Amino acid sequence: MAMKAVRVLDLCFLWLLVSAILLKSADCHRWNKKLPKPCRNFVLYFHDIIYNGKNAHNATSALVAAPQGANLTIMTGNNHFGNLAVFDDPITLDNNLHSPPVGRAQGFYFYDMKNTFSAWLGFTFVLNSKDYKGTITFNGADPILTKYRDISVVGGTGDFFMARGIATISTDSYEGEVYFRLRVNISLYECY
Amino acid sequence: MAMKAVRVLDLCFLWLLVSAILLKSADCHRWNKKLPKPCRNFVLYFHDIIYNGKNAHNATSALVAAPQGANLTIMTGNNHFGNLAVFDDPITLDNNLHSPPVGRAQGFYFYDMKNTFSAWLGFTFVLNSKDYKGTITFNGADPILTKYRDISVVGGTGDFFMARGIATISTDSYEGEVYFRLRVNISLYECY
Amino acid sequence: MAMKAVRVLDLCFLWLLVSAILLKSADCHRWNKKLPKPCRNFVLYFHDIIYNGKNAHNATSALVAAPQGANLTIMTGNNHFGNLAVFDDPITLDNNLHSPPVGRAQGFYFYDMKNTFSAWLGFTFVLNSKDYKGTITFNGADPILTKYRDISVVGGTGDFFMARGIATISTDSYEGEVYFRLRVNISLYECY
Image 1: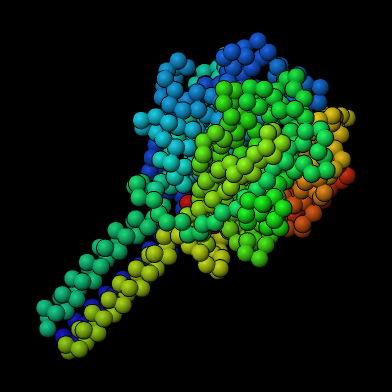
Image 2 (image 1 turned 180 degrees about the vertical axis):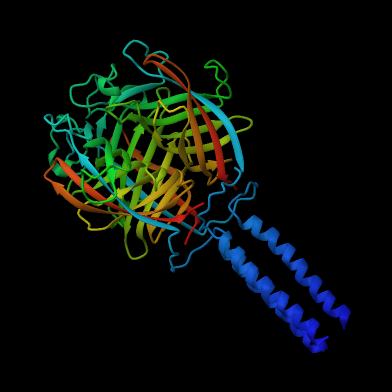
């Protein structure tokens, strides 16, 4: 009997050990290669029509800054290096510009490489539809010529309270220097 | 006696099960509707006086970018669409511009909608007072005409090491296009 | 014997209590002063050569915005207040501009104080070397004249999936208004 009780004690001690290890790993200090599954995943599109001096009625973005000597209705050479645009773009569930918008993508981007097309983005999805209510904020580098680019979801509000994750961006379509459409595959790994 | 020991074993096993479940939920993958309580909550105010060409002595912000053809001492029409300002604004504990500042709000905002007043904000509270030492960084869309707007707390340093949360902004006062005061209700949900 | 079993029960109960407390603290609501150890820590350098009208061949950044009346090839007075630059700077493992780059620092900074040198930074390390593959995104105020300044790591991708933490920046060198080199000590406290 004494042995049995001791075995129980051992078991408790073992469990204490295992728990301590698990607790440690449950804490926010992790460095391993297996990625977790997202707690939420969905795809949205947004559509950017840049102002070129003639399309004020339907432009959704405009250049507001550029290097010395540049005009703000013409994209600079050098892969648009230094052009900074602010935008208020419609978000749709599919790739059709004329689909009913579920919200607005609001923020800014600028082109930051002279020898290739590359941008940096800071923007927020302001969503207000049956399925999505709240905001998601994004930050990151966008190497435009790469098919899939990962940027960071740095925060959210409403349905997306405290969200964090990764958005995989791809250029779904573009028309010269006036229109582009981005497909945004949002994977949240912290949800409440 | 044997039965008692077995019951103890059962209890341990049960606890193992319960712990495993709790540990799982303690991990960072959550998607439920009940919001947690903030680990820290406080209110601060900041005051923005925008440069209009005549108030260099007390202006705390200045337009540095605007769409083609605009002057940087006059807000654009179209709800200031495309105006981008950088700022270094005093932060106070109450709504009085002349109260002793507890820090500076530093960053930028730009107006990004043509058909209504709306902005996007990226800024940091640099706090240095008895009660607050450290920085808090914010990102998000600010639909100005809405009474309460939520933006994201994306990071912090010092007392606010690794902070995340929500800041609920409201326009506490404004005077034409020269002065505005924002009330910022900061709720942190990740604290160290 | 009965007493022994009871003691075992007590032990289990005690452990249940301790676990519950630990689990609570393992959850994401923490507010205590002891800082955790970083799960990853490393140092990188980046090098910024600003365009001054004459160095187009090797400039890595350019002013794209400034207050009313300013030229974009000359830094403004007032501690460069209102100057906004976009950059695509080489990142190196040591403090030598000519070392093989391990990636590019891409983003923007602007000077936001009139009475001292201070900036605000939003940028991403786009890393692509043997040891580092992925992106790290930073946000925060940079009081340049302070020896060590903490800014926030707000997200990451690839090897730095979902990273959060603190970057301690110091000005390692500068040459007038054309070149500066920042040492970035990155401490991640959330790793996967």
